[in-house]
Image (cartoon, rainbow, N blue to C red; front, side):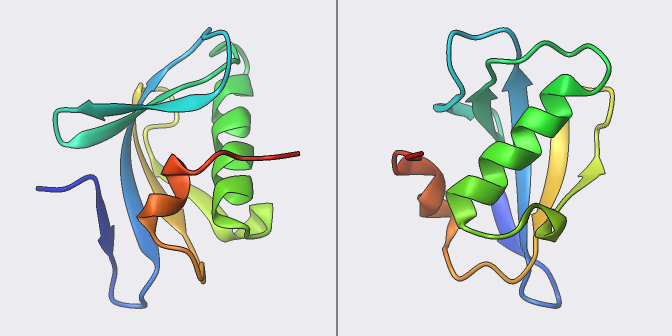
Length: 98
């Protein structure tokens, strides 16, 4: 199994494993069948989830409303959907600027 797939509507579905409280937000490699992302946010009051969704929206160059947390609101293991992205999963391995 891979950490990403396309669903029936050609949306990108990502399987992620998060590590919160990092120095900076970045992709850090694979963790089993998930992509590990380090977040520079704490898991308090949804701050880490909000930071993750913003990071993904910027990485895939889509509006925040096109990034949806499907599973794992209170877990390190998350399933996220990116709708109508013109970029593939390799977008996460390119530096995010700005």
